[in-house]
Length: 115
Length: 117
Image (cartoon, rainbow over all chains, first blue to last red; front, top):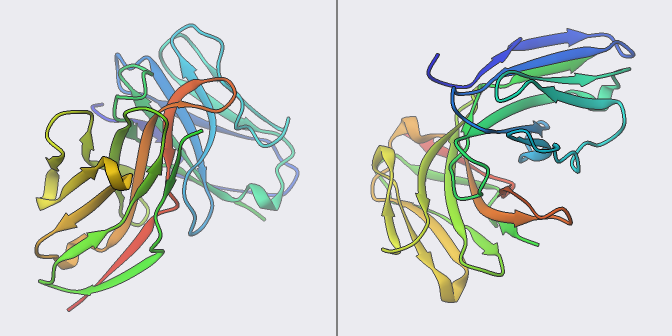
C-alpha cells in the first residue's frame, strides 16, 4: 500500500493480558516511530528505529513495553501484562530518513482499550 | 532540548471566518517546523512544513504558516474556514532531542478546532 498500515485498528483486552500491535511502514522509509496518544492529549514518543542502528527506547514508559523491527520493514510493539493506564491510541509513523527534517507519515493508529 | 507550545487548547470559529492557530517553539538552531491535522479516528496528516528560505509557506487545504524567528513562532492561518476543517491541529519541531540526541519530531499538545455553521 501507499501509506503506513497499522493493525489491528481496534483492540479490546483484559487487564493482565499481553498485546501485540503491528506497523507496516511506507516502503523505502528507513525511520520508524511509535507514539502513544491518550484521550484528548498530544503525542508521546515511545521508540524510534533508524535503519540497522540500535533503536532509541528512551520513551518507553516501563519494561512492560518493547518493540522490534525487522530490517527496514514491519515493526511490532508489544505490551505485556497490560494495565488500564495503557488504554490509548498507538500511532506508528515512518519517514524516508531519520534526520529530523523529513516529514513523518502516520498510520491511522490502533485504539487499545484495557478492561 | 526542543519543545513546542500550543497555547490554545480549544478554538471555535464560524464557517467562513479567518483562522490563526498559535505555535511557539524552543530550539537552539534553525528549526524544522511542521503542522499536522488529525481528524477523529485517524492518524496525522501533514499540512505543511518549513525548512528554510521563504518564511511564508503554503500547504494543503488552503492553509499557510509563517515562520518568525524573532518570536520563535510558526502560526498556522487560513483566510476562510470550512466546516470540514474541524479537527485537532498539531505543531511539531524536528531536530535532535533528548539525552541520546536522536533526531525526531517533538509535538505540541494540540489545538482542537470547532467550526460553527
